Image (cartoon, rainbow, N blue to C red; front, top):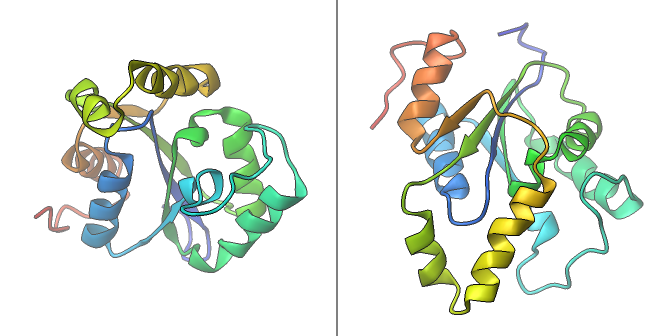
Length: 168
């Protein structure tokens, strides 16, 4: 890691129903670090979806991202499907003012199709979710993962965290 004033990001991206939020929340508890859930901007619960396009800067997006700066610490998790797009990730990094290392994980859960069937009644909705992510993703992650332990092991190998970190 860089100095204590540097702001590093752990990115967790992937299509819906792959466990991004679960992994981010678990990792956040284990490492005692904050998580910024980008889905709260793109899919605000009970609110109208923003008129924003992935990979394009707009005033509403910039204001929202800047409002999340208070959550940024030495190490912070940034989680959401849209972060699989390099331009969108650049926008988040820029307006969060994260100046450190960025490591990208893509969540791919082996039971994603089962979870999609549980979450979405219609095949057209399931297809839309899968195709949405495929359409916006334009970069390769540092590691494809299916569990929080895989993320922790990767971070330990690269000395982002110490081996004494509990994984329970």
